[in-house]
View 1 (cartoon, rainbow, N blue to C red):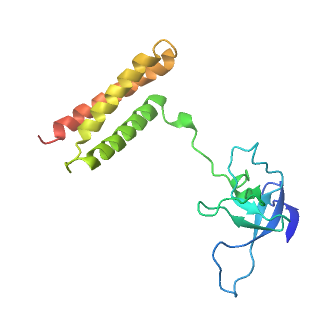
View 2 (cartoon, one colour):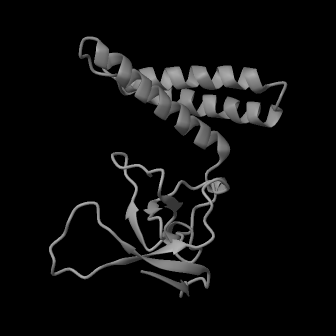
View 3 (cartoon, rainbow, N blue to C red):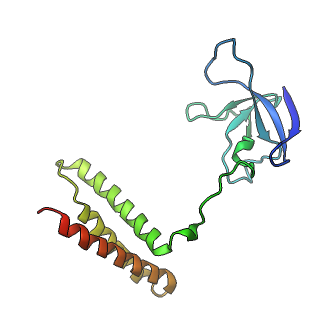
Length: 177
């Protein structure tokens, strides 16, 4: 059964719809309802649907990789995903200086690449200095690449390279041969 109402937190229009669980539950449990956005349009929304509404729009079920939306069902999104009152405050991207973020992202990618590369070969310990040196090299390459198109971004990559090289020098001195 579908009940149209408003969200107590933000005042948006929602529909409370009976959820049909993917796995059967004990009969002693009450039926549960989930708030769904009334105006959700999967073609216009950047958020993928979370539930599939029945043809009569009276019941819904969660979407999973094993059970995607069927042709006779309608896509729906839980209001929990879009309610502004329930969203956690996020740390603004400017809280961490851009060169430090760039350095962290490059280092993370290089560590992951080294892990994948070493998984195929003989199991040798991965030296922290190797990932740092590779990430610093990438930062220098990106600084050169962006020099003409975006000088500010190029400067940030150059600072990220310096940060990675400084850390490389500290790690390299501590790493046993």
